[in-house]
Length: 621
Image (tube, rainbow, N blue to C red; front, side, top):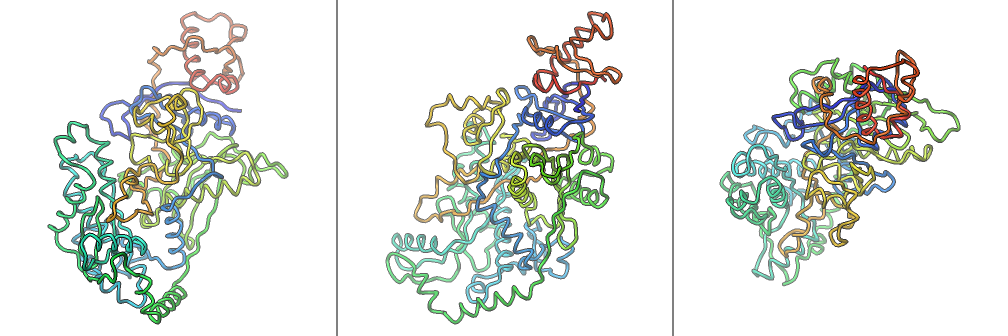
């Protein structure tokens, strides 16, 4: 059976907006035991768990309203950026992509460089790969090009820091990171032809491009008031791109490349000037056909290189929640290196990620209502060549896999393990649904519209948000216009909006303000829209010990009149008693105590719902 202990409120500082006061307000319950279907019902009313503690944001009062978000796995549309994550992992497993600097595996390869490596690092010299080197090599190295793209991204990020961070925008605003992309041949053809029509003569070869200016403009628009933006002047993508180019030029030239601002994009041109053969386009096909022998040799070299690389083995294992020293050691490294925690104790780890109130249910032969692994709390281990590299803490419930937390090896950050494991969990649901049809949803925890680090969750499309009042599921695209206006919204009110205000579903990410601006002739068409937000991999922030013990019963101003508590089941010294039968079991009760008990049970019944309050046992502390 399901047994919960005592209801209360807690007021704490917020881990999302970093408030200085107790602005985060939520309901709280301790759970002795929870049946899987009861916890599923609580999820569908906006609750989550941290260990054995259950909490639910008080949406209309808390500083950062958190909406439960889910995805129907069978409807999932994999974006190009998510597909790149899968391909990057496959390249790593095939031996075509090596670990970056900082990984113990890479000590013998000093030419590899991380995006976060300081710009004055001694390894920077080997990163200055010239355009000529790329163009004349018989078999261009994917690793070398990845290295150079990382270098260009770092140069842009350095310019962003100089122009914005701590200056006009403020140090409290987290700015997106630049992602440089290779320009595809068809885009080169379009841009080259357009430029020749305007200028005539010759055009430089466009090799790389970056659309960070559009993302910066969007972040600054959200972060600053209209008055501050007016004082700072033009902060359009065009203006931002020009500022970044000037800053980069001031810091020094990039070997073999010229950088220019074109309609908000940062374009990197090869120093080699290529003649235009006609007035309309660059004939890239003719250029390729001039070197048939080289192309063939390049293909042979690539294939030979692949055969010489050592493949890696990825293993996946699911185990019921229990303490594992190897997992704890990985968790310690993750928390200290990624989240900068100074102390990580075994007891706090157990309370957060090992303890669970969910009663396990074993699979039954011939029963398609329970998946092969059963119901309960699990740790999903990911190993590469036997080494533990990531652990996903999840709950398997009648309707869903609920993702609770993920921690991974900091040395493999370049693999985007948060995104990769999320995609594998979606695949797991699709596979498991064949044997358990009711298990069809992926719950990603909470979505907070005001927190940029949480917006990556909406990139798993088509996702839905839970209305905090009617407890109806509303697709993200319909809810977003309401959340743009107010952080707390009754999002099921979207049906009352004018039809032209409701956007239609699409397959790109949730924050691509730049997509409507890519219609200029000299601007590369951004076909591979990169997620600009941080790879924020945990599903929910940890509820620490202080937060758990800060429950408050003093807030009794809430109107709970009309809430039926007659059938609330209470635990009295091991006996189950409904509230309406209390007098007949214990005899006369002081009216003052009875009023307080009824007020407490009314608040509890209101936040968990009548159906749950009538079947979950409420134990008085």
